Every structure is written in C-alpha cells, then in structure tokens.
Amino acid sequence: MGEPEYESVVLVKQEVFVYKIPPRQSNRSYRAADWNLLDPIWTGRLRMVAKGRSLCVKLEDKTNGTLFANCPIESYPGVAIEAVSDSSRYFVLRIQDGNGRTAFIGLGFGDRSDSFDMNVALQDHFKWVKNEEKIEKEKVEPKQQLDLGFKEGETIKINMKITKKDGSEASSRLTGKKTGAGGLLPPPPGGNKISPPQASSPSHLPAASSTAAGGQTEWGEFTSAGVQSTTADAAAATPSKTNANWVQF
Image (cartoon, rainbow, N blue to C red; front, side):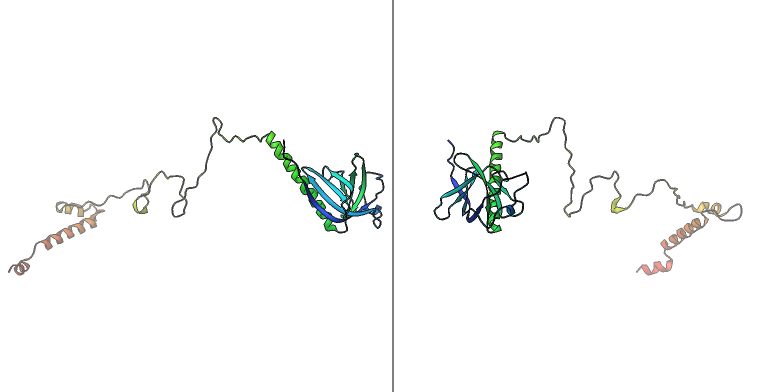
C-alpha cells in the first residue's frame, strides 16, 4: 500500500466575486467587459486545495464555510480555469457538481495582487507535478550510462605546458648542437687561415735578407726583429765584469 494522501490548503482569499457570463459564441477569448461587473451573483471565500497531484478551487461561504461551487483543475493553463483577455483580475472557471455536470462562471478579485497570487500557486503546483512524473519515469526507465572507456585502437593526445621553478616556460624541443662554454659561438666553418711566420736561424740571415731585386722578402722585417730580440736576450743573460764584481762579496 502507498502512503495516504493528505489534503493541503495552497491558497486562501477571503473575498472573491462570482459573475454570470453569457454563452460563448465563438472561439475568441472571454472578455470581462461583457459581464455585469457591478452586480455579482455571489460573494464569498476562495480556497485552493491540493490532495496529492489533484488540485481544486473551492468557493465557500466566508461565514459558515458552506460550499458554493467546486472547480477541479487538471492542468494550467487549461479548460478548467482560463484568464480573460481584457483584465488580469478576472477568470472563467468550469465548476462541477457531484453528478458530473459542469457549468462556466466568471470569477473576479478586488485587487490585482490576489489574482497574481492565484497564478503563482497554480504554476507552482503543476511544476511540482511535472517533476514528480519525471522522477517516476526515470525509476522505470533509468538513464543510459555513458561509456567513457577507450575503445580498441583509440588513443588520446595531451598537450602539456611545463614550467620551471622560476615560472618561465621550458622549451619542448631540444637543440641538436650545444654552444661552447661561456656562451661563445663556435668559429664559422671554412675560411682561409694565415700560417704564422717561421723564425730563421742566424746562419740563414744573409739569404733571407737579400732578394734578386735588392729588396726584402715578405717576412724580412719579422726575421730581423726576431734576430735582434735574440741577440738582446743573450747580452742580458751574460753579466759584465763590472756587474759580477758587485755581486761577489
């Protein structure tokens, strides 16, 4: 057995007006201006009552609670309750007696806030009914679970950005050549190299210093400079007799 359904009062308005409306001649919407708004046929209290998913509007005597009319509502908007086209304070209700007979009456509020409250109560109830139906449907037909696993032969590619400790980005490609120590670049490839001059021995000095035209060779100046520096070094290495006398005590 299911849980018993309890009756709950959704909305109460202490004063509403009921009007007799003319028969509907065409499919156009109802207009409150066609009613005799200054002469309502009944004045009383409105109670909106919910029992499970069913909802009804009860028009009762505000003194003793005697039921004047009952309006079951299956959906909103729908045939059971319909707003008029020329005012937000008036509605058309389809009332029903115990024998199943129906009739249409006009319903009006003295203040627009009262009609706004009834609209909100109707929308909230049927929104809740819709959510309940959706939950029950999901219980019978559960949602299909998504298969996020890899199929055979499927691969995934991930692009990662690697950062150093100081916050700078590390290069994802390594260079094929390394630079020299201290950040110096290697010498350019190719290029002609000039060989250094070769020092001549004293026995070759006359031949090196003379040419057929009476001039010097290409390395003549460098050779004579080398000879002079060699002779000076030899003289400095052989101390004179005067200096030798000073050294000996």
